[in-house]
Amino acid sequence: MKYAVISDVHSNLEALETALAEIQKRRADQLICLGDVVGYGANPSECLKNVCEAASVVVMGNHDRAVFDVPLRDRFVDWARTAIEWTAGVLSNAEKKMILGFPPLVIDQKAGATWMHASLDEPNEYHYLFSDSDARPSFKLSETDFCFFGHTHIPSLFSEKTGGVRRLSEGVVSLPKGDRFLLNPGSVGQPRDKNPKLSFGVFDSDDRTFEIVRLDYDNRKAAAKIRKAGLPSYLADRLL
Image 1 (cartoon, rainbow, N blue to C red):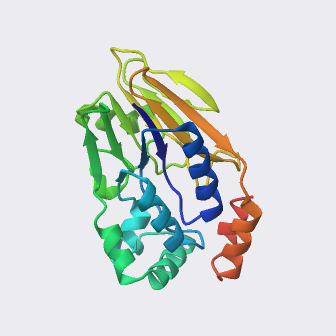
Image 2 (cartoon, rainbow, N blue to C red):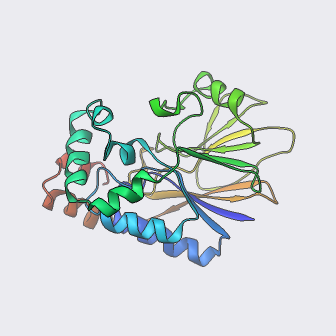
Image 3 (cartoon, rainbow, N blue to C red):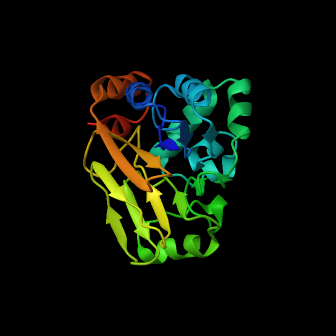
């Protein structure tokens, strides 16, 4: 089975539409979204609709949860909190109910994979996985060979056998038998690896490979929408 894996769309419609068009060309069997459909960007309703129509699994990210969880929202930095308050104000009650239905994680025995947003330990705390020590608790708790996560917005791979973290550039990596992996497809809507191209992953469970795909999109249009909506200009600048 071939799984297209997206994460951290963050209401960036231009990036999402570009990613979905490429995924359709690649004829993936399923689309998986690792959360944070909303937040930061100017098109939360459109992104929510498109993701929910296309994906077989959508897990809840911290920005998704902050739409209705005010104490979590209050822990955000100012510009992130401003954006999620704006998002909560423009989403309909029906759209908020859709988000409320997102599970915190999904264990997919057929794929041999766990789909999650941040980490397996204390999932409601949304720990970042940047280092080997960050990853170790999730390896201990994992019931599958592959755990896919987002949240950091950086394409990366952790190997239980060799340890350490590997930043992933565009291309295909092999996932040998006898090892377990934590894999991050990067961010569709707000990459944070000094590369403005959107990022997503393609996981082949039969061949045990993971491909990182990077694509240009109209980031200037997405940034202009953020400014027009009156959202913090930093969120627009971050896309360029």
